Length: 102
Image (cartoon, rainbow, N blue to C red; front, side):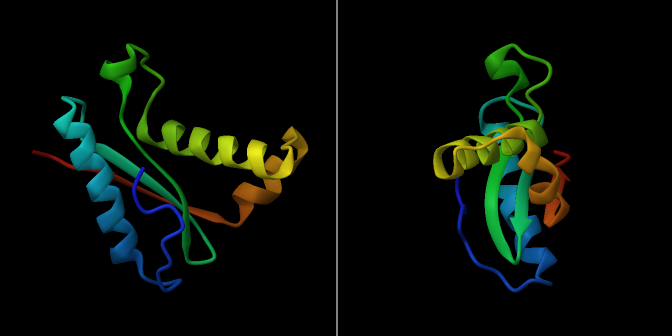
C-alpha cells in the first residue's frame, strides 16, 4: 500500500485524489474494477486500499473496506485496539474514494 504516512497540506484534496488514482490503477493492473481509496487524518494518509473482489473471490473487498482493514490492523498493533475507540478514530478521518473509468 503506497503513501501511508505521506504528509500533504490539509486542504490538498487533489493530492489525495492522485493517491486514490494510484490505488485504482493497481486494481486495474490486477484485472479488478479500478477503484482506490485513501483515508486521511490531519493532513496525513493513514491507510489506503484498492478493489480486490476478484482477487479474493469476496464481493465485500471493495477499496474502502480494504483501507479500513489496513487502518484497523495498524491500530491493533499500535494501541492494543478495542472496538470502543472506533467512533473517535473515524470521526476525524476523511475518505477519498475514486472510481477510474477506463
